[in-house]
Image (cartoon, rainbow, N blue to C red; front, side, top):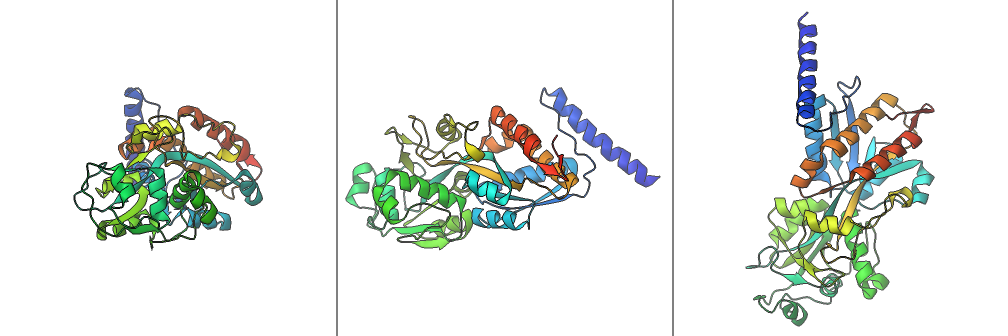
Length: 359
């Protein structure tokens, strides 16, 4: 009798929460179907970890469904979903349509954000230091080695720059953040293109490696004179000093929700095979030049229909009710038109035992 009473009370609490949302003029939460105790395992990109962790915590409070997401880097996430050791992988480096087809996978964009160069220079505050694409590439090529190099001083005539060696920090693991960062360098520097190229892991000309956005952040904060690249939320949370970057239109811009949105404004998601969209070095006076999307990767053929539906319901809830949380952490939510495209693809392509899973 007591068990039944507790169950009734729990159901009434969830219903009350839904009615509260409806009363606020928002879309009602899609209630999970018999999912109590379900654990969904994912692994991959560190870039979106702050928002995935927030969504997972809020969703568990609402539904009891636990999302266990391991922030191990995009390379590890792709390996684990291909091996079938997780329910979903996450990567900031989109797989090509051919790669997806070869492994029977489906990918879709979950959220967008920015990668930002961060520095540790005494007396320099966030946004003080201006940097051109050429200077950034030259630093990572090991050609500019001092903070008072004439090229940097010409870009920043009003700053007092020290005669201090530059310590270059990069990712040590296979990383979608690295894919976005090196994709940008590959576009703006012919020398980088010919000597290094881009990918989740590259043969770095100079520097020391840190594991994850967390590892790069820690190195930059610890080493005076260091420069690294991290996802914007990590830079903010750790009060790091970001640079202003000169974009394709020749304007120095700050990383922000608005500048990430400006970079993503022209993205053609509908006609991109496998949603393979790259947002680096986009035109527009307000565009942040190192913007990227983060992707979820799942198998088209699911073994467990109920668990697969529980997973999709979490993603649907995150899309439709997690936008405010994403913005609070300085991510860009996916536009509703893109969400609708993605969920139509779920209906068409995702199956368990030959039957559609969604909705």
